Image 1 (cartoon, rainbow, N blue to C red):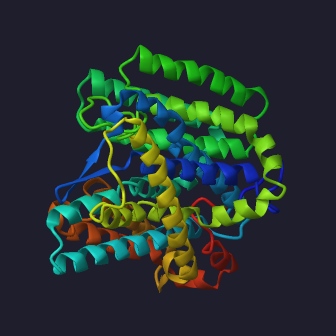
Image 2 (cartoon, rainbow, N blue to C red; image 1 turned 180 degrees about the horizontal axis):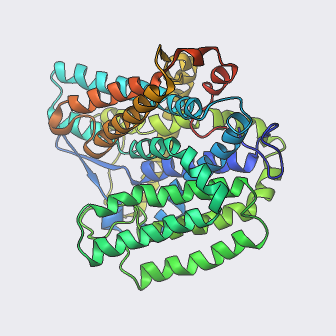
Amino acid sequence: MSSTPGTTAKTPTRDLAVDYYRVSGVMLIVFGHWLLSSITYVEGTFDRENPLVDIPWTQWLTWPLQAVPVFFLAAGYASAVSWGHWVESGKMSRQDWVRRRLTTTLGPTAAYLGVIWLIIIVAGAFGAPGTVLEYAGWAVAMQLWFLSVYSMVVYLTPMGMALHRRFGLWVPAACAVGVGVVDLLTYAGGAPYLNWVNYLFCWGAMYQLGLAWRDGMLRGWRPVALAAVSGPVLLALVLIGPYPVSMIAIPGQEVQNSSPPSLAILFLGLTQTGIAASLAPLVHRAMSGRLKPILSVANANVMALYLWHMVPVVVVAAIAYPAGLLPQYPENSAPWWWMRLVWVGILAVVTAGELFALLKMRRFFAAPLPPIRVNAPARWTELSLLAGVIMAGYGISVVAAQGFAPGGSVSWHAVILFAVGSALVAVEPRQVASEAGGTEASRRGPAAG
């Protein structure tokens, strides 16, 4: 649940602008993935084109389509509302809040991973080619990196809230400086792998801005000034500096903006933050009328859309291309662009049916991880929570980087890491089971309050 500025933590109400940004952000990400999933089928072999490489001007399209910064911003806002309502009011312990938040994320994630892994195993057993399994497993795993980073920033929310209460906007500012220093050491100093730290610095900065936004620190002239300054800096980093135009990683480029995140994508996020916070009151009013029920339904299913939106890509391609149902035209030709829109439309229809089926089975596909209650003191379950976040997050990141079937077979160490990590996250002291807050909190999604 989110809240409008000025409400108290005891009686939070929804800020429809935050809900809208969360839903529209995911929809933009989905649209971008679909638009860029240009699959080819020649002489019985699947392959793919990369429009960002083959049609360089399309790299500018990644600026409005790269909505991950706004999603972290909205997640931080919603977490601040939830933290104030449950923890600062004394209704729930810090550890319990973190655990409930994580289990509502890892539950649907576990269902998704389990289903895809099962399909890969069964398909392999029935003789599906390893190259097909590898490509399909990659396509339906590319979006999962977000969940690994999100789980870590959620785990660090207690620290983030403490720092926010003490230092306010200096916290995201320090994270931004960290991104710049890491980029400098990586690209000027040649330090290998150091820029992976920017997954935490960059997206942590956006999450902290969400906390600050909830507390009214992005009102009045501040968001306007933030956008007015960040926009030109972003242009300078791209046009004059070493950063590429594309805000989505392109194979072969020495400097990437999203994998790991760079200073350029951070300033894109800062620009988006300024615009989003400035327009929030107008968006809230616009969503308060007839659109409110639609927004509510979309917000309740946004996690399912994010997780499952690439499955229709594989299903439609596997059926339509071998059957000759989808014509293939030269890349960047007018018919090719029209087919891109037809492709997106077909995927939208198939995904709508997929989400309807998932809604009917939401007890399995949307349920949080069931609690594992043990007779242990809180300090021990704190250790299991930390170990679980690390293991589950690493398991997810392995799948996101390598796909579900690297080399044509399931990566069993990723399966084990995720399964054990998720179980450790679900471990809680037995006395928690009787707390009234736990049941209600467990029903909330990862970006809900």
